[in-house]
Length: 225
Length: 296
Ligand SMILES: Nc1ncnc2c1ncn2[C@@H]1O[C@H](COP(=O)(O)OP(=O)(O)OP(=O)(O)O)[C@@H](O)[C@H]1O
Ligand SMILES: [Mg+2]
Image 1 (cartoon, chains in turn green, purple):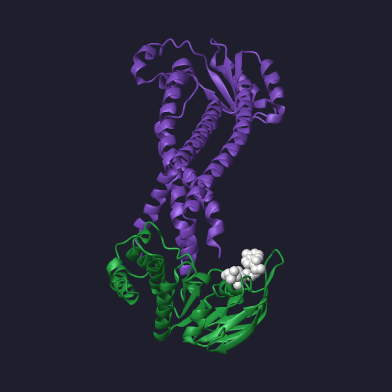
Image 2 (cartoon, chains in turn brown, blue):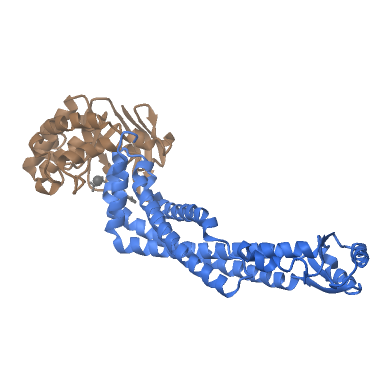
C-alpha cells in the first residue's frame, strides 16, 4: 500500500517538482504514471525510493512513514522495492547470471539459495539460455529483461519502472510491458512511468496523470484515445 | 553480509589498487616516507631521552676528593657536604666501588687488565650528591668549591641542557613536518580511493537502490585504503630497520659515550606502531572518500 498525502517536493535550487500530490495505491495494483516532460513523475518515484525526502506532506509505504525512516533503515526499506531504469544499469563486466545473483549477494542471501533462484528468475523473463552472456551481447529488450529479473531477485512487494521502454525499440516495448503485467499477476504492485500513449491505452489499466506537480487525472482504462 | 564471502571485498579492493596503479604507488610512497620520518623522529627523541637519563639528570653532582685523604679527613669532607643547604642525598663511593663500576663498564673480557690495579688503586673516593634543589644549584656548587680536600666536582648540567634544547628543537620541527606529511598522505589516499570510487560510481548507485548497506558499499574501499596503509608500513618498517641499523653502528663507532637504544629493543613496537599508524591513515583517507556515497 502506497499513500501520498499533500506531498510537496521543492529541490534545493527552488524548483517545485511536486506541488501537493494525493495518491493511494493498493497492494497488487498495476498503475501507469503519465505526464508531460518535467511534470514530476521521476520525482514521485524518487520519493518512493527515499532517494529524496518530501519537503512537506507524508509518503507512507507499507505502514512506513518515509520521512521518519532513519538513514540506517533505508537499505532495508529499499529491499521491498524492485527498480527498473530506463538505461538498464546492468553491471557490464558481470554476466547475466552474475548480474542477477549480485542483487541477492548484496543483501546477504546464502549462495545455495542464489544458485537455485537465479535460473528460475531468468526463466521468468525467458532468458534461461543467455545466462552466461555479457550485457553488451544482448539486445536492449533483453538487457531490460535482465534488469527485470534483477529487480525481482529479492522478492520485492513493489516494482518501480521509470520509462522502462524508453531505450528500446517499439516492438520490444510490448514484450517488456507484457512481462510487467505478468509480474503484476504474480501479486506485485507495479508502477510504470511511461510516455507511450498507445501502450497505455492498449492495456486498459489504472492511469495516473501528473501535470505541473499535481495529480490531474486518475482513472482506469485508456486515457489518450 | 555474513553469508557473503569476504573474498568479494578483498577482490574489489585489490582490483581498485591495481586499476589505479600510479596513484596507489604515489600513496604508498608518500605514506611510507611519512612513517619513516615518524619512526626516525621517535627514535631520535627516545635516544635523547635515554642519554639524558644516563647523564644522571641535571641535579646530580659527583665530588672527587684528593687521593691521599685519611679516613678522618674523608669523614670530615662528607660531613661538610651533608651540611650544605639544599643538598639532597649524599652517597659515599669508595675507590673499590669505583673500580668495580669501571670494570662493569668496560666489560668482563677486560676484567683482568683492570683487576691488576685493585691493590694500588689510582682512583679516588667520591661522593654522589643527588636530589639537589634545582633552584639553588649554583649555591651548592659554590659551597662545594669552598671545601678543602675536594679535588674536583663534575656535573653534567651543561651537556644535559644542550641535549634538552636539542630535543625541544627536534620535537618542534619534526612535529610540524609530521603534521604536514600526514595531511599530504591522507590527501593523496583520499584521491586514490576516489578514483576507485568514481570508476565504480554506477555500480554504487545500483547497489544503493538494491538495498546494499553503507558498510557493504564502503568496505571494499576501506580495505583498499587499509592495504595502502599496510603495504606502506611494511616497506617503511624494513627501510627504517636498515637505516637505524646503519646509524647505530656508525654513531657508536665514532662516539662511544652516546648510548644508542638497540634495534632489537624496539623492533616489535616499531612494527606494530607503523602498521597501526599506516592502516589508520589509510582507513581514514578511504572513509573520507567514500562517505558521500554511503549516505542515501
Ligand atoms: N535534482 C534536481 N534538482 C533540481 N531540480 C530538479 C531535480 N530533478 C528534477 N528537477 C526538476 O523538477 C521537475 C520535475 O522533474 P522530474 O524529473 O520529476 O520530471 P519527469 O516528469 O520525470 O520528466 P521526464 O518525463 O522528462 O522524465 C523538473 O522541472 C526538473 O527540472
Ligand atoms: Mg523522468
